[in-house]
Amino acid sequence: DRKKKLPITTILYALGLKREEIIENFYSSNLFQYDKNDKTWSSKFFPEYYKRPIKLSFDLIDAKTKKKVLNKGDKLNFIVATKLKEKGLNNVLIDNTEIIGKYVASEIKDKSGNSILKAGFDITEEILEKIILEEINGLKLVNIDPIIKGPYLLETLKVDKNNDKTEALNDIYRVLRPGEAPTIEIAEDIFKNLYFNKDRYDLSEVGRVKLNSKLNLTSNIKETILKKDDILAIIKFML
Image (cartoon, rainbow, N blue to C red; front, side, top):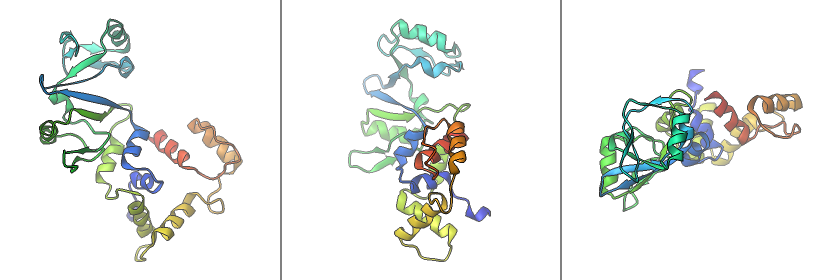
């Protein structure tokens, strides 16, 4: 029934994960520092990010020496990146244009504590101007590989109308039992009974062994009820 579809992030909220925790569980992130004098960003250089060769969309510049290491359009792979690292390339400069379009791993707030951008949203040119104007000199940005792991979960977070466990549980209850006004206790019981109740959903020892094998888990075979870690592993496998 299409009416009963829910964003996967709603399930994650219902499991007790906060927005930032959802992102941390499925993506890595890097810290980007802003130099207001040079008006440029810098970030650490990690050779392991180039195990899949890429064609540079910008000049690769050493943040310490300000010297160009590779030109825009050059190919960069793990071997080349490792050699650059061995020669002392620890941080690289990042232009403003390279920040636009990246997703933030944590919420950005102004000096008054008001939200500029929620975690999981991508930076626009207008948002970047606000960030610089507010003198926010550090950004935690999500690493996205469009081929291996795209921004699908982040885009789902953006459209999910729920923001926490209570909202998610109530939403799930309304979908399963439309027309009934829930309490948070009843909504949570209904959710737990879906998959986390042995009388309703029992993996069996054989099922646990197969799940462990498929998802590289180490749960005891006697644990035949699904756990939060199982759900996270299933989603990671699907992504």
